Length: 203
Image 1 (tube, rainbow, N blue to C red):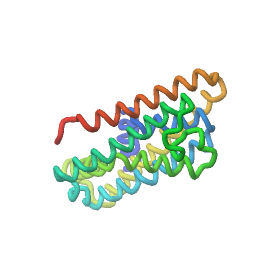
Image 2: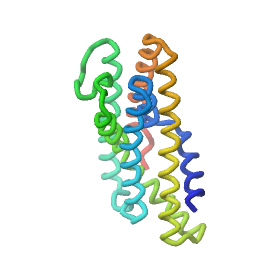
Image 3: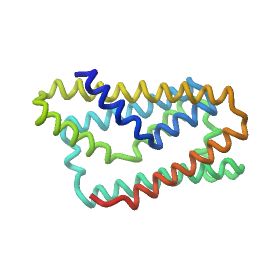
Image 4: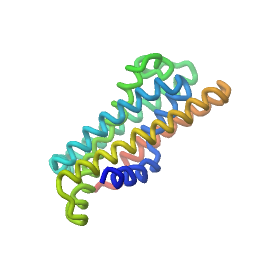
């Protein structure tokens, strides 16, 4: 059951989002080990989200007004991060605490990765739906659901660690100017994700 959850989670990982991009950026600027602390932060929040979903608490926030509020909250976080990253490339410090070049310690990457992951708490609703479907379609019991969720969480750790490895090679082989262009692209993508989160069809 853990392997089934792992396979399902790996499929989801290919829907590249801001978390994956952030881990890649940290690895390209600060190396693999600092990026792994970011992976730990992501995994912690994902684990909490999956745990909440297995308990069925996700249904509590599956209400229109709550979902809209969470969506706005998440969009603001991503927009601020994206704008800060773009301005940093022109030596304009928008928010010093978010300056990617200030990430010199693992705890900085860890906390920022947690914040970016937490910017999409609607993930809880998604996992609640997945687990509900598995309970009914596959006749899984609660213990199997826990193992499935653990497998899905494990896929996050493995996939993002691979992204960190790739990013660390970028740091070694690419020039500073190329990395700066990549950072600009990261900032634009963050803003894109924030705008998409706001204008996405309300459900």
